Length: 432
Ligand SMILES: [Zn+2]
Image (cartoon, rainbow, N blue to C red; front, side):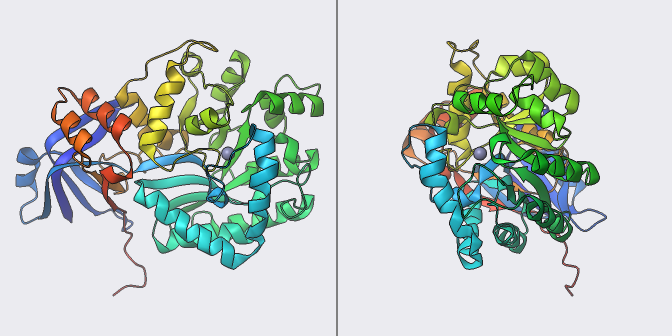
């Protein structure tokens, strides 16, 4: 067993953070050999229970759960920051040309390696990621995540229509490839597979139906897609499915709403859609930097909480503008405050932090596995330096409460705050 002595941040309840200012985090193997949290609490109370422990002392530092990113596109690493007039021109002019290069395994591996390192550099230890329509792109990402022992979920994009040559797949072959990738990767080490229809307009009815059949056959596999990001996109879906009650209901008719189904954006939806999200256990990946960058709209937090469906935060790189969870949490605060298109709300710092850690894990069906530092959780955590910049040091020194401390980090923080990332190491099966 190993232990770290520092300030330790964890969640006692949803959005209820605890900061042990002189805390101890004890990590050791569980019965399956995974490194998990064995105990967390004050140093003075816990230290006598673990005599002879190997303790790393980090005065002035904060240990916090690794961040969980609910929606990100790894092949869009080089699309980040591309100028475009909204979602559909951005897809056509930047995204699809970049994604077409991932038929090449060497290119996929080079980008995947950089991408995973960039996630870690920003303190993101779990992500639900889109690859491209090419199976090689999934093998590259999950292979790189496996080498680093990360918990990562990814899927090959299904898009057999309204997509240019180079990224469009074949209806049947796309489904065959999906099932083969599930067999190869899902549940291997810390990896998971997500059935990944890009969005309604890019998939034929036959492909959506096949995706739903796979989702029924493999109930613990994830589903990831997009819904109601942008008004032009919503109008397009209305043309394709004039009988459907809403965009979201198209996914329902193909069996694609269920626990472990995660839909990015969920902006232009109504209360009936929200009730459908709740009743099916479907989660939203709120992507505020992307929504602000592409001018898509504002996620209605009060609407979500009124209905009570699951949601968490996501970077949505490359529509999103940053890998940094701090930037994403700050953008979520802006989106919450916006009060012209929906009711505005001032999200609390603890609520923002929860959305990117324990809340995101809960929305992914991984509560108690990642996103928190309570006993039993896998030991993925970040070591934060609240003095990382002169202004941050000045501001955090004046913090009179946990909310003030967390909000200073959210507003002023970036990758410089992430001093170290620790990943849960499973006992090697073949090791000595
Ligand atoms: Zn996306």
